[in-house]
Amino acid sequence: MSGLELLQKIRDMGWTIPVIVLTAFGDVATVFSAFQSGPYDFLEKPFLPQRLIDGVSDCFLKSRATKNGNSKSLI
Image 1 (cartoon, rainbow, N blue to C red):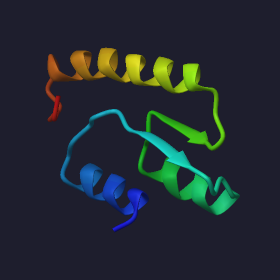
Image 2 (image 1 turned 180 degrees about the vertical axis):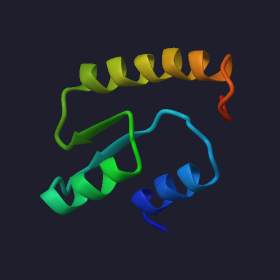
Image 3 (image 1 turned 60 degrees about the horizontal axis):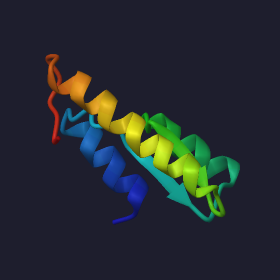
Image 4 (image 1 turned 90 degrees about the vertical axis):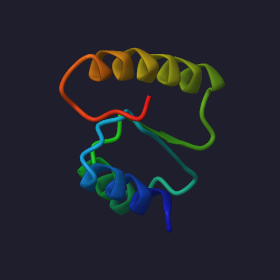
């Protein structure tokens, strides 16, 4: 299963956890496919490490807010 397939399966199950997609293949088709499943962010390699750190930090904050709402959450 690819990462994009996993992301779609997570969304199909109703989970709203924030997901950061990392790829070495940031072609238009891949980006379009990823964003259909609603990732929090999409980073193409190579990327600045601080951008990933900031994204993960933001995801934890978003996950905490989601967990306190009505959505299903894994965190």
